[in-house]
Amino acid sequence: MERIREFFTYEKPQGYISVSNTPPCLYRQERDWTCSIACIRTLLSGRVTEVASENEFIEKFELVPGPHYVDEMIEKQMLAPARVVKTNRNFAKEKIGLPLLARLLEEKYYVMAECMYNYAHWVVVLGYFAVRNAEDTEEHRILIYDPYYDQVRLVIADEFLTMWCDPAGHEKEFVAIR
Image (cartoon, rainbow, N blue to C red; front, side, top):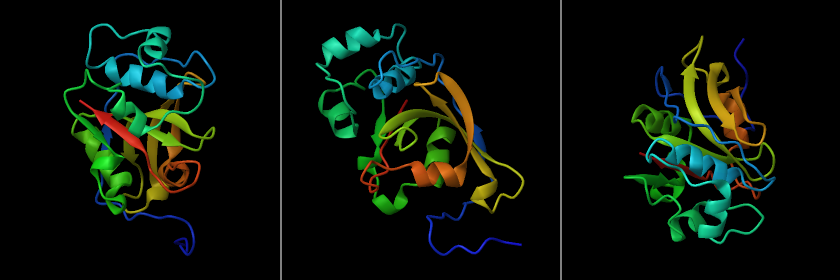
């Protein structure tokens, strides 16, 4: 029996897709507030031969404890070594969703997204997999790297979509580089 969808966010899949793109190094965050730094370092590991340490990153960009978001990353040029940078600011809000995430991975971008797993928490998106029923995102999975726990986790795509927002619940922030 198909679920009746009346309230929660739901996206209609755009065809079957299974894709992954994993950066060479997965960096664990060293402080309780440095998930964004760990994710940026992880993405940059696929673009530079030597990635700055967390301490060097904090000093260079004069970062203070607390969450850090896309606007600051762009303003301070934290992603400068990347050849191409795309963020949620490059797309209309209605275009930001699971199909875009899968397409960026398919186009060989390394992707990080801000979500509510641990309140304003950044994770690296490693893969998107349509399993069983290609037409139902409840049957799709997203592979993420969580730098706080230093773990790779497979999550239900619908669950990720619900958690993929800022603390106010409005923006789906992400960074994609190649």
